[in-house]
Length: 255
Image: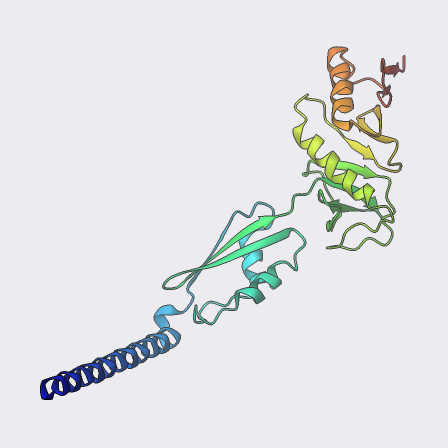
């Protein structure tokens, strides 16, 4: 009986010691973490000294750094990445931004940009537009940009950073569709203009040739028309090609 009680007492003592040891270990870890965090937040070793911008093609790095409002000398752990991303997205060209810390003192900003695809003229200036119908900027000169003219929209109320105002959302869907077709075009024939005035009668232009696409099977119809231009050497001619219907295309070239 005495032996049993002694064993029980020993187990209780061992358990108490274990619990004390665990508590001491936990307290030590908490203190260590607290000291480490405090040092990280206070030491100048972790102050931002370098900001690197990658994957930007349209906007230069200096402009992105300025837009981010990240200041050199600030502690790297004090940065609020959500605020930085919000600051960067205020530029319509920036679709998204991924911000990373590279210890001890470098911030890496990875940019995903919107691509300029179309333009239209308004009040003697040019509005630059992306594949989703977002107005990216207003420019006085686009001679160094390879863009396609976009027709069939009312741009009077269009605002930079916003989607073109439309009543029929299908027109915006057609912008995306035409962007893909322009990107996939390997014919050597440049698509210089698209007219989306009528969703049932889409038209594209290759210089002075109008291609009437109608609606439906747009990709196949456009490829058919471009092949006609290439095979008949019509690149520099003026007229139209109507592939809007089933059957033999109508080709009308000015003499």
